[in-house]
Length: 54
Image (cartoon, rainbow, N blue to C red; front, side, top):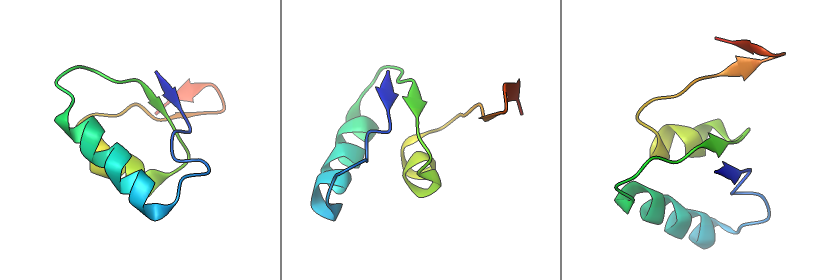
């Protein structure tokens, strides 16, 4: 589980994290407000707003 993994990362560090997650064969639970990062590293998502899954 990763909660806001891109907080406080500079661009090169964020890119390395993205590459590592893309190479990961397993599942990752990601909680983030960074929609661009999420779009790059996920194949499926569940969006929750105000306690409701969308």
